Length: 139
Length: 389
Image 1 (cartoon, rainbow over the protein chains, first blue to last red):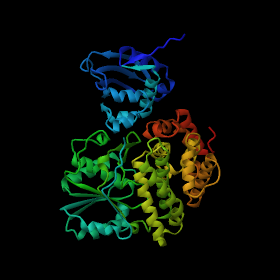
Image 2 (image 1 turned 120 degrees about the vertical axis):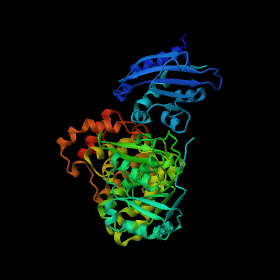
Image 3 (image 1 turned 90 degrees about the vertical axis):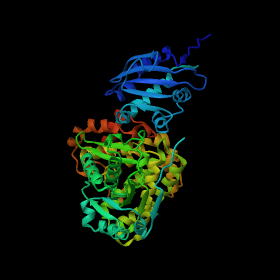
Image 4 (image 1 turned 180 degrees about the horizontal axis):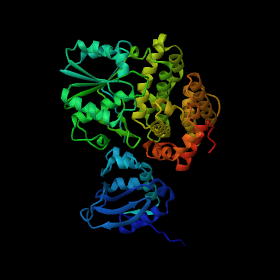
């Protein structure tokens, strides 16, 4: 008899698992070795999600230094905000949306230096690949 | 969901330049370079514009691989002249410079770095843009890419916005009839790379595929003719001119891949003209990508008449066909053939890899290279060694 271990998304537990796996991802570490910048990942309500979830993620030179669920988007000022509805986050995590194409087609919004992000597309790809590896149960 | 963005009007074929007589407005500003002025090409455009009665101003200071400084200077002149029409006349450098200058003219509150797909630029309140290519070509007349060199960081800024796609593109083969063979070869290969990359990257779609495939057929057929006897072969010039724009529409609505990621990096570091700096990587990248998309290369091979064999065999014959084409038009088949010493090349290898890694072409390539893969790709292309990893 096995244990079915799935992490609910969105949740504090999920973002902590994501951060842990990111720190184990050598390809991310290589792609993001020069990256300095923290994020709010904001999941806005739709499709069964009844409130906004705000994650804080601090990414520094290929590592995730901190990740946690915040009470609100006003709780912390960050260099970047990546925001989208729950339905699109589900698709992103399942690998059905490319993160950059998602921005270009306005499925997600980004606040912060676009130029800096567009020079780090490989790191962005690895972030999403890592998210896809978290064994996830959607709320 | 995706998009297909194109100029509202593309005027092509013999006599296309006469469309300029139809323009209405008070002032028109031409962005070009000194060489085109000396060759009399600017005068051909001015002759047509005279019939409109518009005041004409010419900015001919665009350099190859235009810099931020040139763009900012041109934007300042634009702001003083206040034209209704801006014409980018020349190769990719002039047309991209025109796009960037136009943005800064319409939006003096922005900087060059703000030209990105997520920022609403709200253009066309002061002027509209016409692009007239004089090479066949970069496809810059129809793309939403704007490549400007940051000379301080020695990096090509891959800027982009759908709003900077020109309102009109004019493809008149008379403007390329005297294109020298070397330039014909370099720019023709650029067009081929655009089409092949558009067809094989992850963002490919039905619209870009159709244009890419037809462009590839035209290029294989007409580029050798244009190279060998372009002065007397108007048909070859016209077909190459059309093919270059079709390739531009293809990659502009799909994406570039690692041929361009490496070509941009190499071109910026070693100051090699764009067409030449991308062409050299093409056969090696096809070999590298084979393990992922042999089927797509096989489709391209079939389109140019290579019909025997498995997908992998057809794809390998395509590599051979590309190398044969490059030999026929005297394009260098390796970086060492360009006269760059091994020592000099290896000294810059870290920088080349880092810059290539920053390109969006990296992540949409059918096979996403690691840093180690990039190092090997650069070195194999230097030596002229077929890819075996």
